Each structure stands twice: as structure tokens, then as C-alpha cells.
Length: 285
Image (cartoon, rainbow, N blue to C red):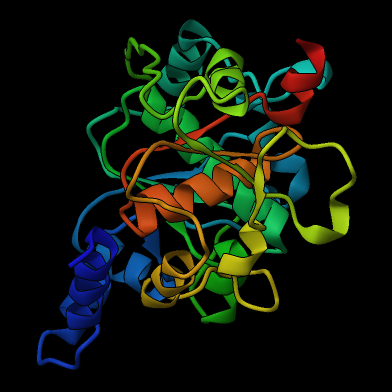
């Protein structure tokens, strides 16, 4: 029996009706529906990181206790957007926001489309690579939270600063050199171009397979598929997930981060890495 089949079986069991269904829905996981978030918040404090930014909707309503850390602060400059902030810069930002690496941390995005989901996945990847150990993304973002009738506030949050010293781990990172070795056949691996078909052009990395991250989302592109559906799609995608390293990429790291998140974190497939610099970095080599 394959690893993917075992994982799929476990997810199916988790979705069977039971007397403890409410507890299952409230259990902390990588991708949480708003109702599950509300259930968790009723039981224990969670670090809520809203990445929309003050000017992009945060001040018009957010979940009580959220801190505003706009998505752009987790990105590089225009010509190097796939390079995350340094560990020192991220340490200062996290400390000023009152964050600690060992506490449950929920990333909240706008929920408007696949780009907002991808932004949350990028922030997740950056924080995980810098030592945050209990991360999750709210599926559907603040849009889904409001649609569910859950409360928001406009009250300002004044976080109590913390002292954190972060260090970046390359465990989930593929460098340009790693990608070149796969493309040139020097290292076994599979490169996945995660861009949506509508934005693809003729430029990609030699030998890369095409698998759009939007294939793992609902038709509206506002929410991800249920984990069991996601795993089914990945299982029959034609990618040999279990055989060797798989590297996801796109134009600037965002859609690649979403594909990495859904394969590595939600589906639980090992050996998946993100080429964060993606085609922007590839063209600059």
C-alpha cells in the first residue's frame, strides 16, 4: 500500500460521523474553517496574524485580538519578491507584534481569491521556516468568517512586545542551484510549475510539469478543497510524490507557496520544497 493511500485512509476515517464530530472540527490543524477557529478561540488564546494590512481592510473589521502584519512585510523588493525577510528583520517584526514561536498562530487573509490564499501560504512558509511550530491558515479568510456570521471588531490591538530570536531553516527551501541540478538531470526530482493556466506563458524551467495550485481549490478560488478531495487530486496528478523531491514554483513564489502548503502541510506529503525565488530568480541567474 502506498504512502498516499495510507494518508487518504486516515483522512477518510477522520471524516466519518461520530459523537465527537464537534471536537474533531475544533481540533487544531493546518487549514481551519471559521467555525473551527471560533471553537478553538473559545478554549484557548491563539496568536492571530491578519496579513491584509491596515489600509486593505483590517481597520474596517478584524477578529478580536488580531495583530496587523501586512503581507508585503514578508516579501522582498520588487526585483526579488521571492526572497523572504532576514531572520533579524523578522525577529524584530515578530517581537514588536508580541509573537512567540511555540504558541498556536493563525494566519488570516482577505479570502477574496486564490492570490489572498497564496499570500497566506507564503507567510505560513516564512514563519515555519523561521521556527514557528504551531501554524494554521484560516480557510476562506475573513470573508468566510464574516459570511459565517462570526463577530469582528474595529478596536485597536496594542500587543505586548516579546523577545524572539529567529533562525531560517532551509528544510523546505529549494535554491536556484537545487533546481538547476534537477533541470539538468544531475539530481532526481520533479519540478512543478504551479501557475494557473491563464497566466502561463512559454517561459518555464526545462522539464517542469504543469500543475496549477488552483486545481486544489473550490471553483470560486476562495477556499481550498476538503483535505480528502485534495489528496485524491494529488494522488492522481501524475506526479511521483513518494519517489523523490518535488519542488513547486511559479512567477514570484506565491502560487508555488500555495501548492507547497497544500501538498506538504494539508496532504502531509514529505519531500516537497518551495523554490521561493521562482522564475524571477531563475531569470536573474
